[in-house]
Image (cartoon, rainbow, N blue to C red):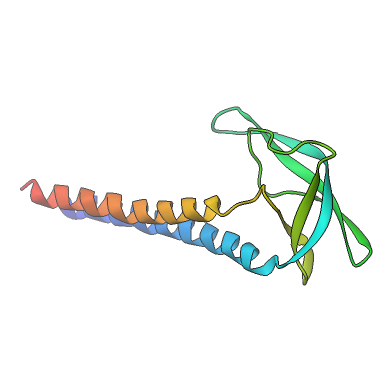
Length: 138
């Protein structure tokens, strides 16, 4: 029975670390690649309802220009608190190779990366502590 419980905890650790690592890499890559800046403006918000809490999540829609070409992009990051206002000027960090890949200066921050690292740490710490308790209980 201890072996089965141990395998469940190891599976949990592998899943948690994998999810954390994949998301960390995705966010980190965006921060590494979005090196150029341009001015943009918030033109609206896309509203979604969170499945877990039924809160309204707002995703800012921004317009900006790169090399004379206009873009209108909905941010991949949303919040239930309206941090930005419609019509607000913002600085856009974009990937020069893929100008549709953006970060909104002052809105997107590295807290998502820290959350991913915390998920990976918990994905290891919880199973290790639990396995120790299971094997110690004999």
